Length: 121
Image (cartoon, one colour):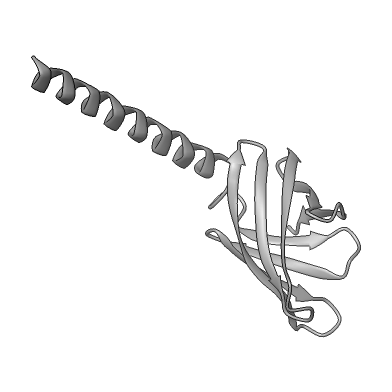
């Protein structure tokens, strides 16, 4: 009886863990890679962020230099988290972005700075 109960509990915990992992993967598929793959221009015209399968780099429009590199994950269908290292400052940063429409990201970094990215077609 005790062994059956332990097996049942283990089975339920395993199912719950798999459900959480599946939900995370589904969210990633909805808002993250490959949905975001492509070039995203900053609203200020300073750089273009090149997104590819969970990674990105921002390239300055005036010099062509990489100014930051990082990763992104989907938090929900319309919410993405960016994490990056600034090549000039040497500092890491993070932002949460809402995706109000298919080709737009409205972001706020951990310091409260707002920026927007628009998919370059």
